[in-house]
Length: 352
Ligand code: NAP
Ligand code: ZN
Image (cartoon, rainbow, N blue to C red; front, side, top):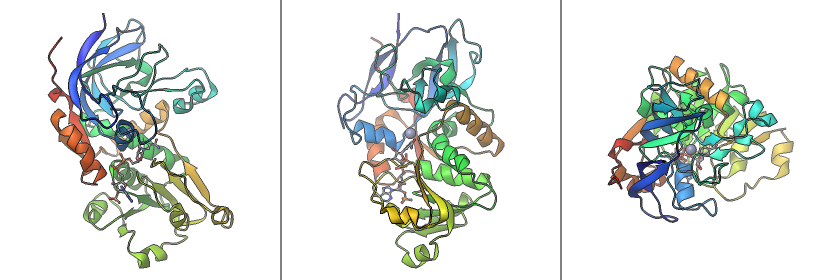
């Protein structure tokens, strides 16, 4: 018999969240059941609930920044034990056999990775995410959370953390690198923390000076308001890597102008309009315009170890279940510092 668990549900596109029971499957041999403690609110949740990326699947239970404790394991589980603290990110299954899965890039699985919510499992059932009290996933996708990182500050690492860690690593950020992080939000503030810990000289490029003190406190050498045209001009051909985390459309050519010849603009922000880039702006100075999609499971585990070593967690504001609908508007308005996490013990629904 599948178990029932209280969850926050959007019944249709853009709907306010309501609380009701949802079902979690019986444990398969390789499954673990997790009592969730915290679920982060990623801007991707908002894009999907509001169908900003196209048609989505409803009823929807968002949440792909999950941290909790294992409460039961299937008969064949070997890597995780009851009582372990684990995190689940954007994926809950992949074929495990294609070249990308074998190389640790499950997000590019040729069969199609199963996303934690707004997806369809290989069993044909819709997936429901972490805004709930419990979840069941294959042990392959439950990443141990190292001691020393609280579950609240760990939850956002499972998306915001890995999504910024992966391009910083891929493009070789380290001592001597100049990195600009565009957008000081959930992803952006993690990008700053991680790039600083990797030894880079980090600049934050933001819409205003409102977050300047926070940028410097996180270790950035400067916080530049993009309206400060003199400083923006002085930063032309300056950075090795620009990491764009902005959730809205941007003038990408402006940011291409900020990287050195052969430099990289890596985009992780996911608005919907096409980029407008004249080929000459790439070719003339041999620049790279790149995208990056979360990160695979081996790299997620590596990122968690890196965070433990450098004592890095997300900067979070904890909210209750009844605050989530309003929190979406606050994220869009740029009011969160810097990630809302839901205390899922506040999600209560009558046992039916
Ligand atoms: P967030 O917390 O809302 O942060 C986005 C930041 O972008 C804001 O804090 C703001 O920074 C800036 N911004 C917002 N609106 C802007 C506008 N109109 N013009 C210029 N700047 C603006 O969002 P998030 O959770 O970090 O997610 C950011 C984006 O990454 C979303 O599109 C999300 O879907 C995407 N994402 C992608 C992946 C991936 O795998 N590639 C994974 C997760 C999320 P300032 O106030 O500093 O300007
Ligand atoms: Zn996310």
